[in-house]
Image (cartoon, rainbow, N blue to C red; front, side, top):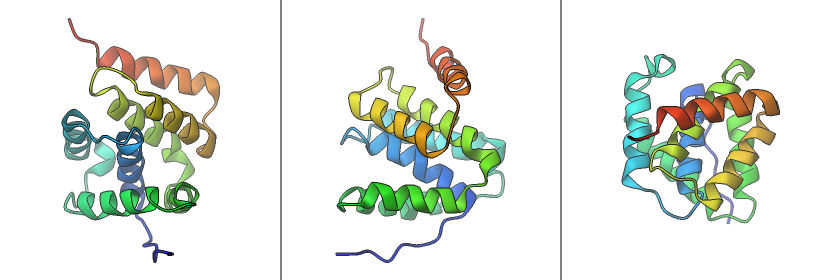
Length: 140
């Protein structure tokens, strides 16, 4: 069954990346949902974003995950909607969601690698973003 794919705004695409990382290990944790909401509420890139869209974007991501070529379709939507200058932003937000619960699961690691590949993030920039996220989420 082919789903009619909606077009995404750049902010929708950022939300989709965060939801994809959260859902990548088959479990969307409360800490990850809180992290997504916090980023949408506070990150400057989302200043004009209607956060009521989070639910619809999340449902689109989950629906695509259930389809055979859904991941390819999802990244097609994201690349179409997201200007190149926000690719590293998307990766940074994804890393923050993955780190929100204090550990990285295999599915999250694989999804982060896919995001790096799909967004053409250089290995050096990715390492800097990953370290930044890691140190922000450390606990005493």
